Length: 342
Image (tube, rainbow, N blue to C red; front, side):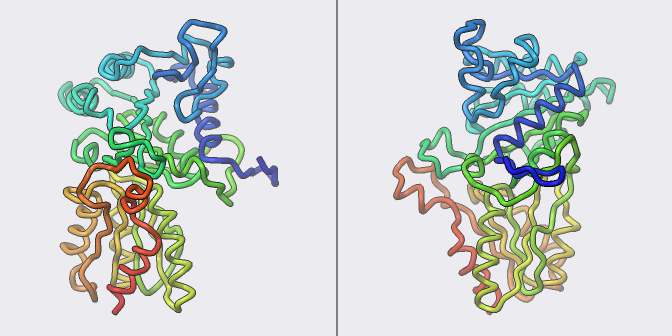
């Protein structure tokens, strides 16, 4: 950590850990549950051996104890259901769904229960449940541990979905999610966890509002829309485009449901061209949703059709060489931007 006038430079992992720690200190109803998050269940000799698969909860069990930091059996259906029940009856649980591909194991608990209880009980029951989950290819983890299927959650009314892109906004989005009275899915792209960011993170707690995009870079010639890891790809592409004499604006969505339609449309009205970069599968993706929004509500402003960049419609390869061809790259974003600016 680098100390500088009340702010520091943290890693993505450190920022998540700090957000969880601050929220647990602030509110005694906040608990965390998941696999390996406390290390070894009730075995003190293995206490905190992991801090979860991504080390996001490292050190928390020592401060808050096993009643508030709970190791669970390897049963996503079981502990996700426990999280929904805990949220509906007065707690604010944070449930670690290790990889987003495990959605298939606990889909009923999330999509039929967490998403619908508030509506079906006429607003009398809130479900302040936070689900944090790992997304993203690029770590050689094979097809079942490398997906980015956040679009599935956005399809369901009653769920909020956020996609942090750096240590500053992940800390603020965690705080916002935990304090929210609705279920919130936080998608942590694992490639972001190994990157060194030149971004200041304030001490103490703060909120990054759910439902608001961020203009990560202003520009005039083309809009690049990113989400989570692809925002970083867009920022790198914008630098390359600048070297070629083009000014690219980068919209960091941050929230997929609700989505900040106004920020997207205002940017397109200014640049008249858009490239949407999305790591999810191409069919029914966030990129498709944004392209449809722009085509329907900003058609008269467009100088070129919206351009979508997604991986191919295939499972994530285990081969490192093939996996490198799966995630959208800076070079592909630059080529797409030049294409729509012709």
